[in-house]
Each structure stands twice: as structure tokens, then as C-alpha cells.
Length: 169
Image (cartoon, rainbow, N blue to C red; front, side):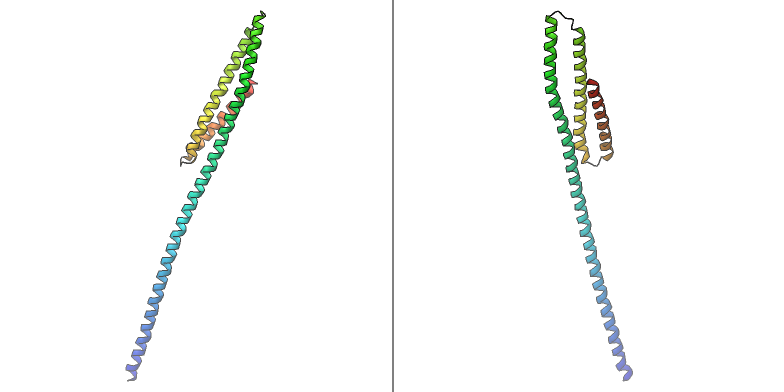
């Protein structure tokens, strides 16, 4: 009887150990599934944050490009007003000189040169504005190589514009 009585105790202890092991395995599996779900949620939150950051950077770049466009447009407006007044004064002086019988061929040649330089500056500004508008479209896309090339082109064109303006003075 002792042997038989001890066997059920041993079996019962073994059964409790197996039940406890199964319970531990189940709780470990649940914890792993919860950790996996938490990781997936963290990945989704990270992706959402990256998307938001990219959108914010895009908005900031667009605002900076718009500021450059506005700056160039303001310069065009300001200088157009100055050039219009200048041209009117020069035309009036040349007309008075012609009426007085003075040779104005050199002055007329200078005016033609001035107009050619003004046209070159206007053309350069138009190119820069076109490049800046193209840059606005590229900066939010995934075409970073083309964005960088367009930006480099704009810097070169701005340098050319500055040299044209310096030569005109």
C-alpha cells in the first residue's frame, strides 16, 4: 500500500508541475504576443512620426522657396519702376539734345546697350523663377538627386545674375 500510495502523490506532483509549466508557457506566449503587438504599434507610430516630419520639412522648404520667389519678384517690381523712370528721363534728354542739334548717336548707343543689359537681367530672373518653381515641385518628392542638381543650377544662375547687375552699374 505504501508504494501504491506514494505513486499517486508522485503523479499528482508531476501533474502539478506539468500544469504549472503549461501555465508558464501560456503566460510567456501571451507576453510575447503582447510585446509583438507593442512593437508593431511602435513601428506604426515611428512611421507616422517620420511622415509628419517629412511633411513639416516639405512645408518649411516650400516656405523658404516662396520667400526667395517673392524676394526676386519684389526686386523685379522695384527695379522696373526705377528703369521706367530712368528710361523716360534719358529719352527726354536725348530728345532735347536732338532738338538742339547735338549729335546723340553715342547716347543712343549707350541706351541700346542699357536696354540689352536690362533684357539679359530680366531673362536671367525669369530662368531663376522657373527653376525655383520647379524646385518647389521636386523638394517634396523622392527625387533628391534632381533636387540637388536644380539647386546647384539656381546658385550658378544667381551668381550670373549678380555679375550682370554689377556690369550694368
